[in-house]
Amino acid sequence: MNSFAEITQKTERLVIGLNSGTSMDSMDIALIRIQGNGLSTHLHLQMYNHFLFPDGLKEYVLTSADKGGFKDISQLNILLGRVLANTVSEFLDLLGINAKDVDLIGSHGQTVFHHPNTERLFRYNIHSTLQIGDPSVIAQETGIVTVGDFRSADVAVGGSGAPLTPYLDYIVFRSDTKNRGVLNIGGIANFSVLDKNGRLEDITAFDTGPGNMMIDYITQKFLAQPCDKDGGIARTSAVHEELLKELMHHAYLFQSLPKTTGREIFGQHYCQHLIAHYPRVSPEEFIATFTEFTAQSIFDQYTRFVQPQAAWDELIVSGGGARNIFLMERLKYYFKNVDIKLSSDFGIPTDAKEAILFALLANEAVSGNPANIPNVTGAKKKAVLGKICLP
Image 1: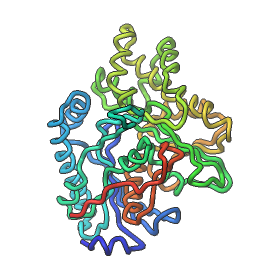
Image 2 (image 1 turned 60 degrees about the vertical axis):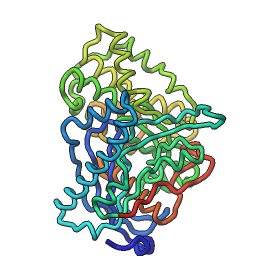
Image 3 (image 1 turned 45 degrees about the vertical axis):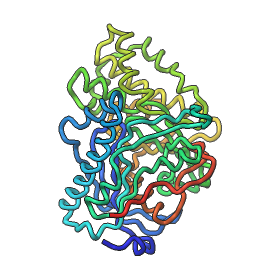
Image 4 (image 1 turned 180 degrees about the horizontal axis):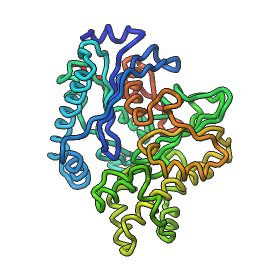
């Protein structure tokens, strides 16, 4: 292992990015060779893979996040650190790479709570976010300097801690000639708005609402399937118009910017509420309706908050939702005048984007560069993101 002082002086680093998304479909991992830092950063993807969680862990984490106590969260914080460290070791073994040749790991951890709305507690204005899978554990078990807990620094300066992807989007997808939108469809869907010749400080970015989260909940609960593969169920099932109308009147869609959302708003509890209020709607109809809600809400947020200022020439899509063929068709139906592309067209595999993001943010942290965007998160100032943990 290189000493931390040596790592900070390097102009090129080999970095691993780790991400476990809101839906906990898998642990995504990417190995990136990064040249430079800041806005002149160049990213070279070496390898990408994903690993499934141990049987039963996803359900245990989600249950603990909803109903667990301090003991559950504390134990999971260490357990997930070890699971993530083991994932790194397996990944490096597959590649035949020695851990001592890797400079950094950037690990997002697993979000168990995200509350971007301000509350008054003991005379302090507080909003909060919590990701577990302690980076100190990863550093100690792998022997690699690990950067984690990226969101807390933005929260500490008054931001919501999300979204963080616009920093990567600007570095990779900005254009001098085209207005571009970048859409990531994970459990939650989010936009980055990249005006041509725009500055980093001027980016608009926000969560549009649910991505795959509500769809996946129904397929897993009623059909014992991890997702609606290719959107096949939604394609052959009917949309329940009354339910869709209620969904499209959700308060979040009318909330002003900046804004962010998560499982607390569009997760299990909300789905259970809808199931109870629409007992005659079949699982297939829920899937079709939730798929249409994802597509319509994305377009609604574009027309409400983006199009009046500058219509897009291109929309670049990433995340697990990009593999949902029917959902992509619905997006193309709504975005008729926008050229829709995939992030893979620009060298960023659709499933690897967020793992690449956390490798980038780790590189920025050890370089001492702020990577939040106050215009996006609502923070009072820029901040270096992430806690650096030495082995």
